[in-house]
Length: 95
Image 1 (cartoon, rainbow, N blue to C red):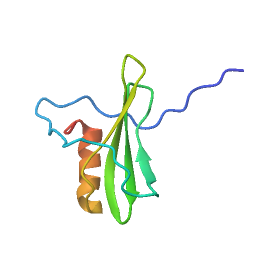
Image 2: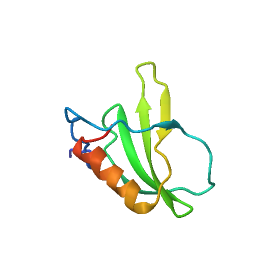
Image 3: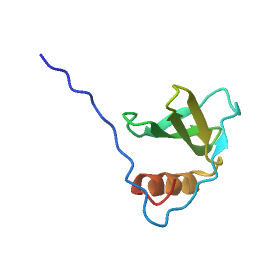
Image 4: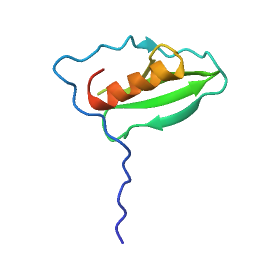
């Protein structure tokens, strides 16, 4: 019996003129964070759309060649703005 790995959504390759996201080091701002959506973690970088305290943000997790994991967050914003950023990331229009 073979088992297949179930993948989630993949991020499109970056477009020629993509928006640079203001990634910031992860800081403990809240004791509860809910992940609403996420991308596949089969690559070295994956993303999560997170919600906490009525605000949304995107978390970027990167595994480096030396095995270290680095986590950054986008600015915390109202839902409409954060969902627009999430869409741009998925489409390759932001990184």
